[in-house]
Image (cartoon, rainbow, N blue to C red; front, top):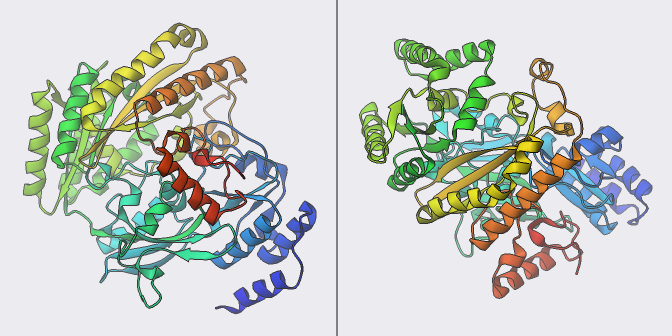
Amino acid sequence: MSAGTEQIKDRVATEPFVTDQQVLIQRLRRVLGDEAVSTDLSAREAVSADVYSGGATCSAVIRPQDADALAHAVRLLTTGGVQVIARGGGLSYTGGYVPLSENSVVVDLSAMNRITDISVQDMTITVEAGVTWQQIHEALTPLGLRLPFFGTFSGRRATVGGGLSNGALFHGTARYGTAADSVLGLEVVLADGSRLVTGQAGFRNASRQYYRTCGPDLTGLFLHDAGALGIKVQATFRMIEAPAALGYASFAFTEVAAAARALAAIGRAGIAEDAYVFDPETTAKNLSATSTRQGLAMLKAVARAESGWLRGSVAAFRMALAGRGAVPEGAWSLHVSCAGNSMAAVRHDVQRCRTLALAEGGRQIADSVPRAVRAQPFPPLNGVLGPKGERWAALNAKVAHSDALAMIDAVEQVIAPYRARMETHGVTTTQLLIAISNHAFSVEPVLHWRDEWLPIHRSSPDDDHLATLEEPAADPATRALVADIRAALVAMFAEHGAASNQLGKTYPHLEMLRPETAALLRGIKRQLDPDGLVNPGVLGLPGKD
């Protein structure tokens, strides 16, 4: 135990706990340091809204430097009756960290961003919760290593803590599943300030975190919990050797059902690390939003990503030739990235993808999209706004492959009655389909509309990109329409028994569980957080019975 930790404990122990908010904040400053506690209005507003909506403005933001400081701060706050809400990169859109009450403090974990251990011998990496997926990828790449799932498209800012709370997926998901599938163990700060360790390191005599399921899977208890059960401060992941060879393929389809059948077939076969479908509108938006400067940067990234100068130059040249015509207008496009230990193995998998896609009527097209995505897996966060400054918010339903077409149809049936009003208000929809491991299919409808920006829209994009956009005026009527459509989609997902990630406060969870399962979840929450002060409202769990 460090001298600093002893000093913090001494400071906490010398005074009785208090409930007066101003005095409480003064004590937080003494525990964490003045620079780690902010009551500035703009800072509080910035962390009290996500990409979709805002809530009550929290009373303070704290930025602890380590787990000891965080644990003591949490104990101070919950003993004082204050709600505690952890926030990672802030890029979610389901209200997961949006406060319900001003009697709350948001914990900004960005200062807890250290990679504490990389064991090449044991193939594990341990990181603090504020570490980003990009940070991990950049640390492991020179070692020839990688996470199986290695990050979200927003991984430049998205963090491990947020991703494990909300079911992060994308890069590597078609083969390896979500972020949670690679976790070996966690350290979590509970509501009373105690620190719980799961996985093998939770055993009294264990020297390393190397195994997850010796006995009940306590690690899994805190995964995808939307931060309801505690604050993650550290995670250990298993690593893999980075693939020696990569290959790509893209296919165009005239209708979504054929593209979905091909995606499901490729997903079931387990032959791609990434497999996803863009609708025509998504492709058009992405291509139209790419500036000449961004295009040149992407070509350089593609050239660097390829093994060998000549191969990289050829790949970049082909991509430049394809240009904005890489995907035919009006087509649904399926994109795959394959990986293996040799080009022969990769060519085999790419050929299998081709066979499956062509069997569903697909036409092979330039592979510019998956090649570009892998060349720059963590692009600037300019995409939090559309190419004309519009906002967007996604929803998602995870279903079995056999239910994918029915879910795609159900999404259209829900949206259809709103089409006339959507046209009047300028609301549009796009759709993303993703294969998850070999057993699940994700349907993600996205709503786009023009409305005033939230703090994250102003802070996330590059300054030069933001300067090219004009913020729309506030449009409460359109915002209400979007909310109605989202509510209808969420209700339909529940009717179908679909799973979702980023549950937050948007998707019903507790009320959808069987009675015995719901009772167990309530009991766990009551045991870990008896006063309901840790992120109340997520998963449908109330603040206090």
